[in-house]
Image (tube, helix red, strand yellow):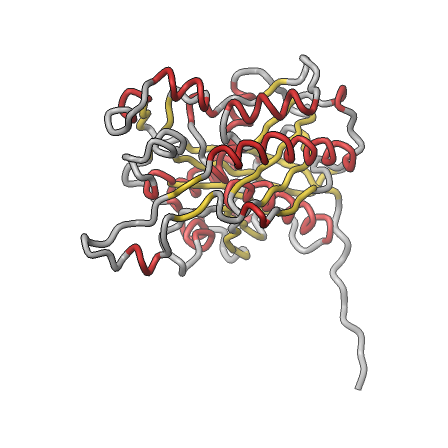
Length: 334
C-alpha cells in the first residue's frame, strides 16, 4: 500500500517579538574574587574587562529562565498559552531529567508547548534562535520562546586564578514569531573539533562524585590563549559571513552583540571585521561577567536600556564556546 504524507502549511517570515532578562541581585566585585586568587583588580580588568559579575543565590536555572521568559512574553504582548514551543539553551542545569525547558514550562504554564533543552555552551542562544527561525518559517510552530540561562557559579573553582573571575549567572529570553518581513537572518554555524578540549569540565560527573575527599560539582577549566586566538580571528570571519548571507553590508549594521566572553576578544573581532565607528558594540561583560548562553540577550537588553540601539536596528549576534562551536546571524532589534 502506498500513500502520501501530509505536509504542514507553510509558515511565514520570523522575527524577535519581545525580549526579557533576569539578573541575580548579588553583585560580586573583583575585590571579592581576588580574596582567594593571586590577582588584582587591575589585572582582571586588563585581561578581561570585567569589573563585576552577578551570582545567583537560591534561584535555580529554571527559576531564572522562567523570570526571563515571563518578561519576554510581556514585552511581546503574548501570554504563556500563546507559546507553541520552548527551547532552553543551558549547560548548567543540575537535572539530566526532566529538562530545564520542562521545568520552565511548569513554572510559566504554557498549557502543553513542546519543550526541550539545547546544549551548545556559549553558542546555545544563537543555535536556539536559528532553530526557532526555521520552525516559524516552516510552519512547525507559530510562537517560540528561546531562553539562554546559566548558573555558572555552581561550577566555579573559586581558587583557580585562570577562571574564577570570568563567569557569572543570569538569563535572557526572546519570543520568536511570525512577521511581515524577515527579522532573523540565515544562520552561520559550525564547529572546530581541533579545540574540543580547550573548554571543559575538569573531570566527568561520575569521577566528581567519587572523590576520596568527598563529592563536588565538576569545575570549568579553560585554555585561555588558544581560545582567545580562535575566537578573535575565526569568529570575525564567521561574523562577516553572517552579514554576507543576510545581504547586509557592514555600513548598514547598527550594532555588534557578540557572546560576552572577554572584552579583548570583542575588541579584536571588531578590529578584524573593520567595524565602522557608527556600530555600537556590546560590552555588558564589564558588569555581568561571562554568562555563556545567557550573555547575548543580556547584552542586547543593556544596549536597549542605555539607548545604544533602538527597535528596528540591525544587529549582528554571534555566540561561540566549548566544543569549539559557534553560531551567528543578523537580527532586527525588537
